[in-house]
Image 1: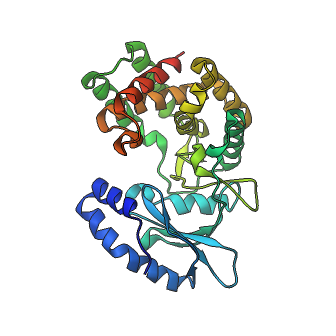
Image 2: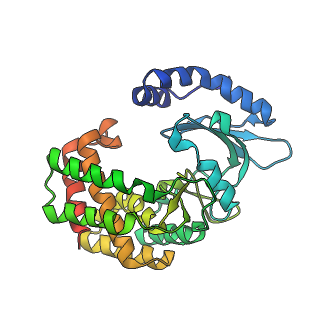
Length: 309
């Protein structure tokens, strides 16, 4: 039986409550069942993200792989559909899937993430180029981002009115306008949904490979939001955050082959949503005790303001 990382178990139970505790208790047996089903043997320490464990494995006739087993949540349903549609184009290959267990057998990438690079231009360029390659016609059955437009607008208006923040009305208004004018009218393109630099890993077949997609349909420019939010501390190191943000958006739009105005508006919407969500739920870094919450909230408000044109 594998050993479940303690931090992953604690985080899952804190987030999911009793169902999370029951799943954690069952997880070693689930992994053992899948190892037998796919004729694999463990090949390294168990790793984890926020919603799943990653078990390095080997099969006698295949290259090294990883088994990913995620908590059974609706948000984790369409990850294998995205990998299947890409077929290894800019993303890790899908070898096997067990939808009943929210599990996949995937190509093993190297342990280096794009986020570890120092050159922000290179990070944004690689992410943009991957975004371009991943923008294929969405397979049938994927949830569409336009279906969330009504919820996004309601949440923006409610949170902006109820939560303390320092964003001027024009910042909130700009985000609401983006939802009304862009979110409800999007193409049927496969979107990663969380294409930040930590979800892009060094590969063997290709220099960089995407992992951990949400698997949704919509506007490829949507993915700039998670990228920029995750890069904000590196962008601050440039000394002029406003200038660095605009450069990052320019580079991403060019490398992804996307309309610069749409890229900017999606980034601003993400920033406003992130600032409000941080006030309602906190940030992962603050919950883990790595950073105090108050400075992160101030930074989130500032980011939203700087992205409002």
